[in-house]
Image (cartoon, rainbow, N blue to C red; front, side):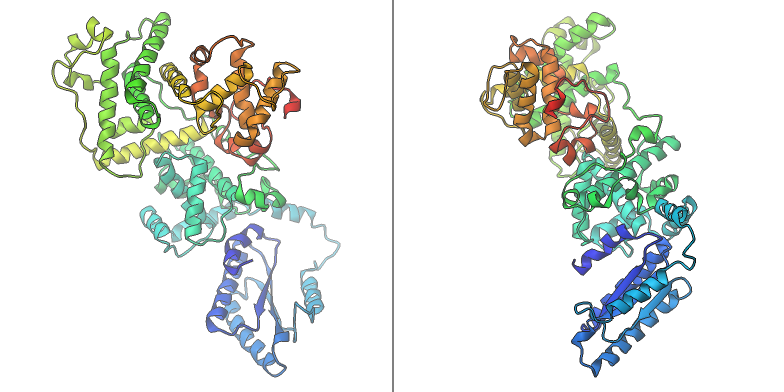
Length: 611
């Protein structure tokens, strides 16, 4: 193991009942190397104090490479330097220097004597004493009061939020202890949520930062574990403090005070075995805990956070925002996307009015007005290069202060509500529609970013189905997108391709040697899931197969367009997250096997043998 990789890794093994053996090489006399070694000695002693460990043994290795004449002199000089370093810790730690002459780990010379001395020191004074309860207590980690004291000390010595973030970005942080590590993770989470990224993407960004800072080799499972714990604690604090938004960076210390267990750097031991957590698989991919599940957001607070209900004022602007977002991401022409959007909105409005007469009638003028306005707002952002991605309606609404009555600047009320305006688009009778707007103020950007953080936090904890208008629109677009893809082609990166491929397989419109129909629909579903699992993962494959099979309900005579428009939820690409958390969905266990949902129950119609 490289020396620079030891610093971050050794913490995972440190506990109150552990001892350290500090091995000093006698052959590297370079002053810089000796100082580097002493720096690690200081790190070890400080870590022992932090974890309340007691024993350290210092030995001088590779003496066999020194001549008989120089050996005593070299050992004496090194011992003198080390004695100066350990002096301030003499009354706090039990440190023994074992300067056995001629020690060589390679040849085993004096090794037995060293081990005997270590064993003698560590042997309990009263061998008959029952230490089981003491060991169990140590495994629990520090007491809550001890953890709170650590938080107070670390917080008193830490910089303000702005200074800390700047130091983290430019690599000038003076301390990199557990408190700092968690704080950096929370700040990165804040930054990523503001850019529209989820928790797993936050982990990717945090690991990039850790690589940049050369903090060893960051491990994916460990990184996601701590980010998850921080998010759970932050949402728990938000509920306790009755905050209307996700806690800010300035709230970090309060978050940790509200959940002092975060300061227990050995917290992972309650969830993961060492064999799993430090395996190569868990280092490179996210693995689920093997001892107990991670705490969920619902466990953190009995008052789950929900986005505000869609009201009449927001309905059309929100729908228009979805349409414009789709025009930017779809390969379809903008005119075709808008046409499908208007038809879908008209259809869903008629259905809504059939059960609720208070829903305003469909108006092509009103719908097209909002699509044009949102498009003009979006164009104004294109002139400014920014990492900020306001990909939720709540954030976009805050950014441009959308109130829902913007139409009054362009239309008289009589024209806006006229029968003619319902039937077809009518041009404004007061002021032409804009092509572009001015850039929003910095205050507006800050408010929108705050809304973005709230929205992404909500999405990562509880994904909701879009409104019926949006689902009808997504279904119509998926049908059009599927027409651009050859029938026999499967591109799992394209949702339209995946859904159409599975529809054709499960209705037996296309067949494969990999699929079987000998034992009926269940066998066909199982073999189809296994066929695509090599690209999507097994849980992912089985989820979509089950959803389509349930929607078919045995009817194999319908066409693809009729099927999708009658089951518009299948067009929602994030449908899995209504049932699965992103962490579970993205785990190696979900990829290699079938795992049950952790958010909402899911009907299973694929037989057990497919698992």
